[in-house]
Image 1: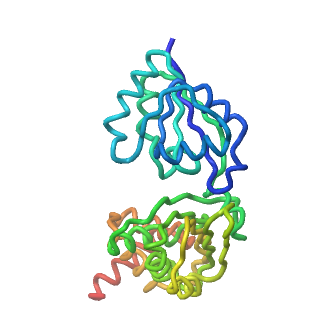
Image 2 (image 1 turned 120 degrees about the vertical axis):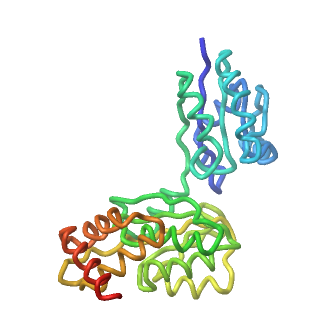
Length: 282
């Protein structure tokens, strides 16, 4: 019989948030694949559990090379536990390749649910939670970052991002540019830790606040784009939005359709505005 791959959520800050099943899996797994074996050791010591299985590292640098080894262990009947430094494996952390490879081999994949920075920040933000999308880490390069943000500038669902302490100032400034300085947002840092802080305000206010430096693990929650009626958006604005999407890499047809859906007007109206602007040399 083949084994089982277990994705285990680990505490994002307070070790007391560890679910009881995590302790059981750490004690009984045949193989534990950890993003950082040193952090795993600190976690097991804090939980007072002694792993009996083999511990291997599984991080971004060796994920591709180590995946076949772990799949082989699973095919031989091992119970493989995958843990990352914090939160759920594969969510902006190593794990996706292993899950995909296991699924391809019809290997059972299950999970030990645990703390999530995405959901915790979303719940604490004070922003709408009925519909949201997770965008992970914005690109590191400035040009790519602003283009990616502009792609979702008209997204009506609440947006959730991860960001590093070294780039948060630039990212908030880019968000203010792409989404508008008046868009509501929340910067959540050090969630569940001693110095937990949730700073709420407009993107313009938060960008100015971040100029003094922001430390810790950071999750940013941004309000979705406001719904606008056709009467609120003139032809020039329709053309501008199409151009923003084209500059971000979208084909014109898709850009026109997206803008039309965002402002609630027929695609033909947006198309005519783009054609008229082109004929006018604008």
